[in-house]
Length: 376
Image 1 (tube, helix red, strand yellow):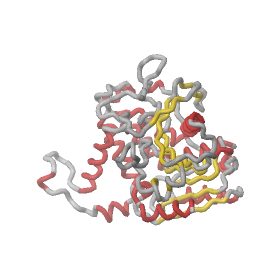
Image 2: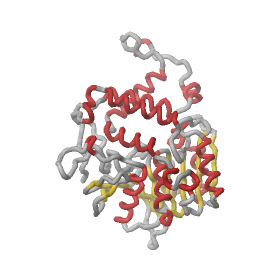
Image 3: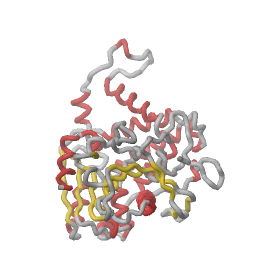
């Protein structure tokens, strides 16, 4: 079903609910390079209306698959389980919800870990330069193959929010409404610095081998360290303080290594980084991470305002989190205020979550009401 290489505990392991759509033509990237036989993975919930006017497209962050919520085909919880479903804020009794796995990822969509149909070998670093615009365009073409041409709402958080903006800017007539969560028109220098460090940690791992690693022996140490750096930036210092304080690991559970882990926060980072290593392809991580750094709405007209002026959405909900320092609140304020200046009805919701950038994944009590109110 998928053209993704299997390695170790593969990130390519698709759920029973995941489907694949093949793009019918050669896909032209923003760089001018092309891809043949592009496949895009997706999952759906709800029922498409006869008029096909109830479609909500969910675009993901860097690491999730298309499995955003459980379904009869796959009852395992999705990464946004509390948000999508019957009677939920994104109500699948009213809407037909589609979540697309990003081009360049490794959960069924074509990416660096996929086989190049021209060579029969994995693309690896021969995969073309990837942009957020490419992710948006591939998602749109996948929807066209499903005979869907208009979106009731496009929803995206983090990288997914950037992809949603790119979609609405490039194809303004396709989008009625937008929900942009913890995202921005461009990355800050701080965010670029963090992701640059993550990519370097992967590339410095000897097992990376300039992208030519054995899929059964990927650069696990580099990915592990990169994930730790990411986790530190995804959550807030306030959460770490309230959640862990200075709690230490029981002495009986510590390793005997000199300078080994002593604090609970260290154990938490290690546990989550170890899980990630077995679920995501390193080269895919490099490409998607860099795409976030490259994205800049100003490139679509000469300024952020000129780029956003292309959006024709009727309503835009912008959600930011006060403790998010990866996509700080001033970026969501700038996005909402600029859209309002342009005549687009944009509402900013500033949430006092202590979970930082990852709050949209865990703070149900604050995120559910604002999304629910938008649709009602």
